[in-house]
Length: 88
Image (cartoon, rainbow, N blue to C red; front, side, top):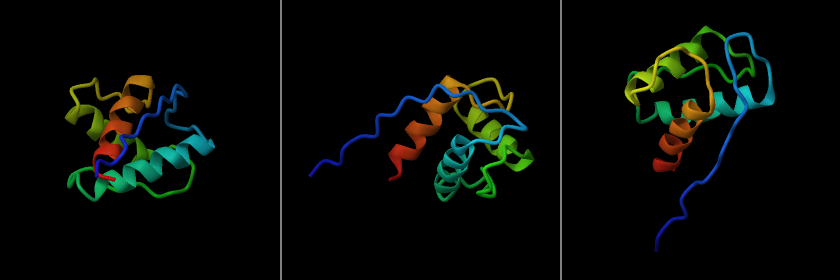
């Protein structure tokens, strides 16, 4: 039986200093990805775009061939969602 693929488009741009429910979602997805992505680092689930979250985002960006600026824009979201969906 095939599992359904995750299709989700997120256009909220998050960056260091952001405090938003979407930061919590980002951190939860990064935490799940970190179980398979050894060097990712697991950010705290605190809803605050802190340094640990920025570093984890930058590692994903590097691994996906994006500019590692630590900002979660629409393109970065797309890669995080794809990684998250591939291991669920």
